[in-house]
Image: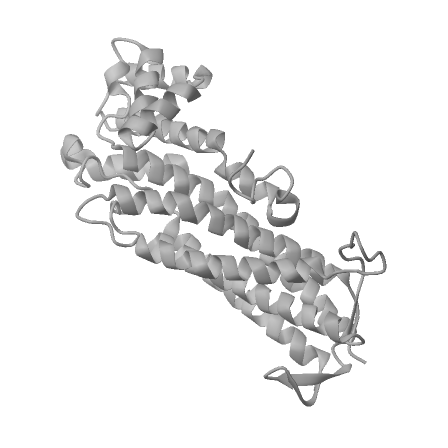
Length: 350
């Protein structure tokens, strides 16, 4: 049983995206956190913070480490975060004398936030690639049918004749802008989070900047000052996820209305009816509207999560955990459905 329709064994056929879902699994999250701990040990050994023997022991242990998921579940129920129990298990696996070198100078939020960014990196690449594919398919529709005429509608009433190209451009051009926005955000957001207990990296002294830079490099991320309580990058990303879904929702709404009127568009395939076998319902178009409205309602929660009191908030941080993965899934599913829908257009206009 699943609480989320995005990874539901049945509903995910409509609302899910397998490529995105795998990056938000529990195992993917743990793997990203272990990548952080491995890179941290290596970076600290490079800078003389911990012994090289300790780093080697940590890396070796991580190669075979299998977390106790039941203990992690109990630990997060008590501590509010998974990292204390995860670090306890890691230290037990490494054993003395090097166990205390694990996680040195870091805090739970460093591990979890950087783990999120590591997982968002391939997700952003996937979103960008699918945006490109949808844009290309719509350009193909425009190239095939763009010179045909159709009735332009304002306020859902007949206005004046327009070309198919006029309508298709209103679907395609926002997606081109979203790719540019995504590229800009990629540079801003794919940065390491490393601040220690309260953001000062006090245990590392004057070697803190060098350790952080080395950590970022080993993880394939950009270096940046700590951002424990600065959540604007993630809120910006959530806003873009809503824009992507919203623009695709406009595409879906238009197609559904054109299919309803009859004669304006011909779609290949469609959803069947259990009671009316003759029907071909515009399922992909409809679900684009649903997902657009879903992300539009969720984005306000990510803006609520900007309010991180002092140096760390448990409440606002947990709110992000509830909302952001679902918004990513909704945007990815929108792109998947839009790609399919654009490919179903057999004719449009007259």
